[in-house]
Image 1: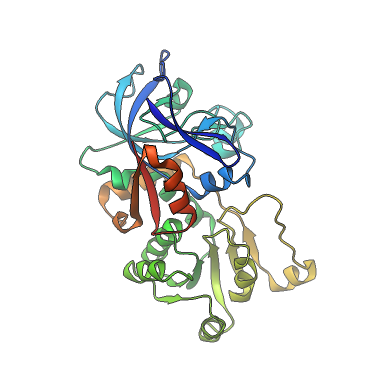
Image 2: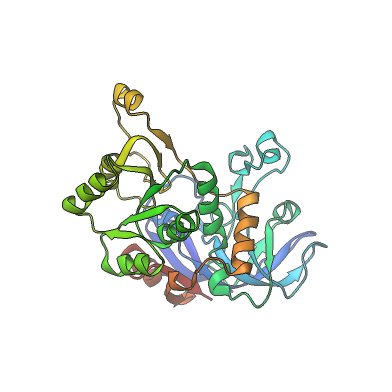
Length: 337
């Protein structure tokens, strides 16, 4: 089968690999689409440490079950996966905090993922509900966003909101947050330098969409009488950090959702932090609860994911696809085996 292998830093290539061999309890998925995540781009650039090359990356996927050796999964169903494979037994897993499991490993991180024609899901993952089925009428173009939507829903539950929120970045994650914050009744302001992403934010209901413009930023601060109640960083642009604290009012909640490359430091004077009263957190990944909520939203059609997928490449053009995503063309780039 064809696969896009992450061999080492700055080395990605399409290659022929043997078909995955299943053990008892495993499931085989024929991949329909698999999205390129910012974390995959960062791993390829050597900016992350939680990948284990050589490995086939890809964890935002939709596929059809082509073989099942597990009683809980039927052949022919459309599915996606929970890419975190945890023990299911430790105190973190029992609390739906699998992402902190000491035995955690990842599909597309540590074992082969979705940039391939077929994906093997191990029994350990299937046993803990790692194969998420949706009705066949739900298109793969929406199903592949289930994991990312789960991450955003998890962050919504963790973040403190009041009346106003500024979202920095209007990629697929930022645009998902736009819809969720509007559904929550929040005045939603988006800061995004790229015109095509600004337009997408407007189309999806943002109340204000601004470039990284000092006049516009100052106007937001004036209009909100000192800054917004909440800031969500949906970007890993290091320049956004200063803007975050400029936009945040006293007592604001700041969610560093975007993953920054290792080696960057957040520096803040402790006395300033004390008297400004910021609530700072970093939401990442999802929970089993949020994945199930994401599945419900997609099945109900209560979130519009169609505008997010803008570029599709065949597996043979994986390198070009990664370049397209890295250059921020469109919004979401996917590989289609």
